[in-house]
Image 1 (cartoon, helix red, strand yellow):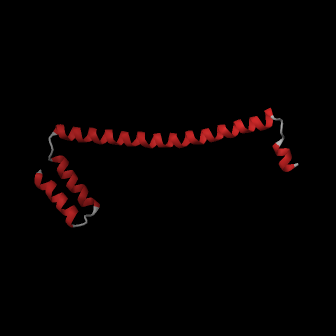
Image 2 (cartoon, rainbow, N blue to C red):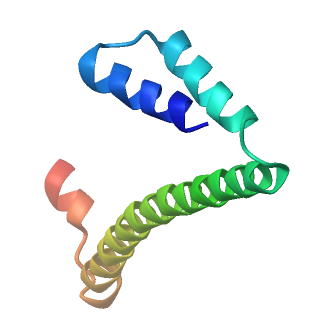
Length: 95
């Protein structure tokens, strides 16, 4: 187990490995673990993936919220100018 891990890191640091060799080392390391460690690794990767997805969704919602605030600001400005002040902006531009 330790030999596979040491060989993996030696080859990563010393040589540039193709992707299939890296996957082979990771596969060997995973198979050499106990069942409990294998389950914990899979659950840990699932949790990290879930946290990544939540982070992406949070970023998208932040951008969308900013856009919605901008549109609401334009709508309020339109309401104040056209409805409250009774100014025909389109008539002034195209008229």
